[in-house]
Amino acid sequence: VMDALRGGKTVSLISESGMPLICDPGSLLIKQVIKEHIPFTVIPGPSAATTALVLSGFSTEQFMFVGFLPKKKSALVRLINQWKHIKEIFPNMSMVFFESPNRIRESLRVLDDLFPNIQIAICREMTKKFEEVIRGAASELMKREYKGELTVIVG
Image (cartoon, rainbow, N blue to C red; front, side, top):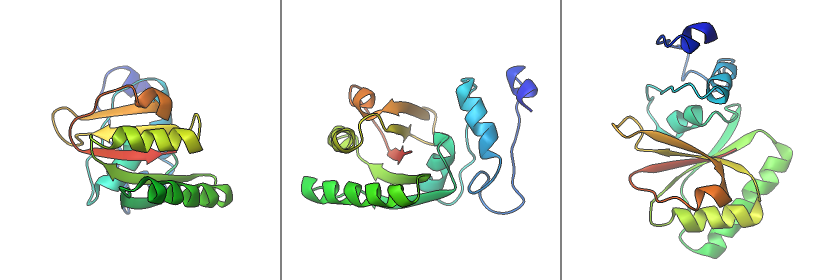
C-alpha cells in the first residue's frame, strides 16, 4: 500500500465496521503516511470530531470529546487539568474540541502552560476546498492566523 501511495496512486482504506481507524489497526498506515508527508483526506462520518481525530494521526484508541471549550479561563484551566489527570491513567487518550479562530490563541496558550511541547493538530475547513491539518506544539501553533471552522486534537 505504501509503495502505491509513494507512486502517487490513490488508495482507499475502508472498514468492515464503523469509522475506519477508530480503534482500528489502519491507524498504523496513517502514522506512516503523515511521517512521509503524503497528503491524505478522510471521507467524513457523522461527526467532525472523529473525522479530525483520524486526520490528526494521533491515537484513536481512546479519546475525549468536549465540544467547545469553556470561555472563562479558570474553567478552561480546570477542564485541561482534569484531562491531564485522565491522561495519567490512559496515556493514549486524545482530547478533541471545537474552537473559534478568535479564541484559539488563548486556548493554545493555556495548553502550552500546562503541557509544554504537547503535540496538537488543528483541522481547518474539513471537507471543504481549503481543508488543512496543521500539526505541532502549542507554542508553534500560536504564531499562526486561523480562519474558518476549527477542530482541535491534543495528542
